[in-house]
Structures are given as C-alpha cells and as structure tokens.
Image (tube, rainbow, N blue to C red; front, side, top):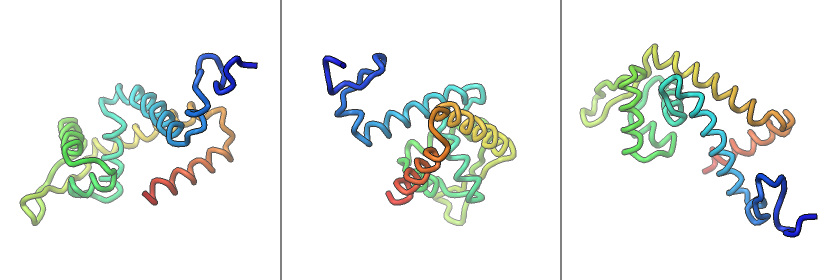
Length: 153
C-alpha cells in the first residue's frame, strides 16, 4: 500500500487523487497528449492540428469567412488569421473576395484537400495508438460523451 493513499500508481504518474478524480484535469491532459502526438506526426506535412481543424471546417462548408471558421472552431480572430495565413502560404487555402469587401471567403485548394485527407488519416492513427488499451465499446462511449460536451457548449 502506498504511504500516500491519495496518490495513484504507476510510480511514473504519481498524480494526486484530487487531480485524477477531476474530469476537467483528465480531459485537459488527454487533449494535450493527443494534440502533442498528432502535431509530432504532422510535422512531416508542415501543418499543425489547429490548421487541420481549419481545413476540415472549410472543406465541410465548401468555403467560409474567416469569422465563420473562427466561430465554428471557437478560436479568436487573431489566431484564426494566423492559422489561415499559414495555410495560405502552404497553398492549402485561398482567400477570395465576397460581396462584402471587408471580408474574404476562405476556400480549400486541391493541395489543401490532399493535406486534409493525409492529416485526418494521421489523426486516426494517433487516436488508435493512444487508445489501444481502451476497449472499443468504451471508446465509442467516450466519443459520444465528448461530442455531447462539444456540441452543447
């Protein structure tokens, strides 16, 4: 028995029960783990996980304003501009004028679609690797719960 009953093992994790019982902490740490591994895999493609989110939204919508993408991903305008600038430099998206000359529509290019497909394949591999010890039924339950949290927020 541990000399500290509020500490969970294995020894390498030594997190207090107050943290391992916190859903917020566990969600945050899980997101960090997945995002870190995903970003490591994406380096070869010259893209980040956040940029993949932009590509996915733009592809699904067939184009959108910068504000619309930011709202969909719950990202501030300045961050969104930087993400789109990076994708535009890669040739993955293009900005086109809209009727309102103060805003631009962002559209995905053919190169961007290929990049999105490759990146989402990497995301599936990372998810499978990270969750390999979690039974499939539990993964589906987790996905359902997380989807409910994200879509209700």
